[in-house]
Structure formats: structure tokens, C-alpha cells
View: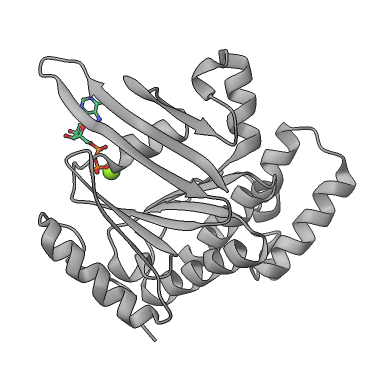
Length: 257
Ligand code: ADP
Ligand code: MG
């Protein structure tokens, strides 16, 4: 079952020069899928995430999100919808420095005024799953990059969103921390059934996903699906990237096991 439909989405930025960042792009994301989006710099990846997260609206075309058309909501409904349905993971973690790890994680629930018992239950199970139990009282400046990203993933999951959107989640991590974060994203995808859409430059990061969607000049270029072996999937991703051209995927901080 598709949970996200992108139908002929076009985004034109008006300015001194008009820029068509997305051009009639269409694809669907299945419930429980882990999808990577790759493309050269300037190909429209961030624009696409901004459309999916409803930070910005398409110029034409439509996005249907679990049966809802966000374009039809008023601003109050939209704010509520985003808060309930979406979880975000960013390259630079975006943790609040004044709050502890635990407070950062439950922040989305406090905004929603959930009962304490619900918060505690979810905090406990996510901390265990993401190996954060020992550092819950620490502040962001006292933990490693990998721990910070795991905290951000817990925060993105705590309100049980329909989709997690990740923009270069391993962009600031070293090889080991990257692999750990990707394995954990894979685990929450499989065990919690979380749907994840991740933009990445890194072909190894992409090889952890079920599918890689390639875009070029704001248009659909290709898509490939994971098979049995991550290593062969990685090779197939490299093959498409070499056809795609541009400066993409020419570096990787992660090594395959
Ligand atoms: P990517 O994330 O793949 O690098 P972007 O979505 O950031 O690509 O950008 C796609 C194209 O749209 C680029 O040519 C970029 O310069 C242009 N663009 C992005 N945001 C804006 C904006 N707010 N105003 C004008 N042009 C923009
Ligand atoms: Mg970008």
C-alpha cells in the first residue's frame, strides 16, 4: 500500500531568473519502505524533501499523504498534521543544547501534551533500542556525533510518525558512527515498520535501503531495488551514479563490512 504519492510535481522558483527545480516528478512510497534519494548537487533533492515535509508547496502537481492532501489544509491544520505525521533527522542533528538527551527525545510528545505514562513507556523502549539508556541525562555537548544522531532518531520516532524524512543523516559522522546509524535506521524500519525517505550522497548509505530513486535536473532518472546482497546492490548503485554524471557519490566515509 502506498503511503505517499508524488504526482507530477513541478516546483518553479520565481526570481531574477526562473528556476524549474522539479519537473513533473512522480513516484510512490510504500508503507514500511526505506527509500534513498540520490542525484547530483542542484538536482532538486532538498526541494523535494521540502515539498514532502510541506515546508513549501509545489507550483503544480499534487502530493497525497496517507489519504490526505496537505495542500487543502489551513495553516493550523497543516502545523498539526506535520507534527503528528512527520519525523525529521538532519545532517547536523538539530538537538537543543540546553536540554538533556531525554528532554530532547520527548520534546515532540510534550508539544502534543501526551500523558506522562505514554512518554515514559516510549522513551524506555526507544532508549533501549537505540542504546541511549546510559546517556539520557547528558547534554548534547557531552556526547559523540553518533550518539547525537541516535538521539535525533529517537526524537524523530517518539511520536510514531507516518514517515521519517532524513536529509544526509550521516553527512557529519565518521565511518563507524555512520554504519551504526544506518543499521539502526534499518532496524527501526524493519521492527517498528517505520517508513523512511532519506536523501544521501553516499552510495554505501544508500545500499542500506530497499530502493534508491535517482533524480536529475528535477526529473525522475532511474530507480533500483535492493536484492539479497548489500555488496551487489552497492555496485549497482555505483553503476547508475556513473551514468548520472555530476559530482555525486564520489566519496564515502563508510566501508562495507
Ligand atoms: P539539491 O538539494 O539536489 O542540491 P536543491 O533542491 O537545493 O538541489 O536545488 C535545485 C535547484 O533549485 C538548484 O538549481 C537551486 O539553485 C535552485 N533553488 C533551490 N532553492 C531555491 C530558492 N529558494 N530560490 C531559487 N532557486 C532555488
Ligand atoms: Mg540539497
